[in-house]
Length: 121
Image (cartoon, rainbow, N blue to C red; front, side):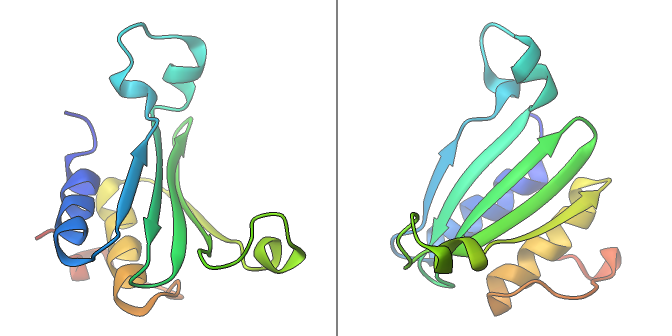
């Protein structure tokens, strides 16, 4: 399995939060690999009512990124689009996990998180 650290964190969060929903469109799982599935091997959309966020966990080429938007806003409103935040440039699952755990804890992106502070469990 690719991305075991990310999937483990999502499964742990799913067990804790009622209404936590994961939609996994990741290309790495595709039976028939295409150009798009190879370029975008990780594409997960999460709805987390615990922090009121819709979260996109993606990989585009080598760049791993996390994006969020407010879950309780209608998606066709300016307020929803203004609520969008993105943090990219992660070079490892461990680095991404540090931000993801901080996001699950506070509901906001931290300014910086040391990789060694990552809690993989």
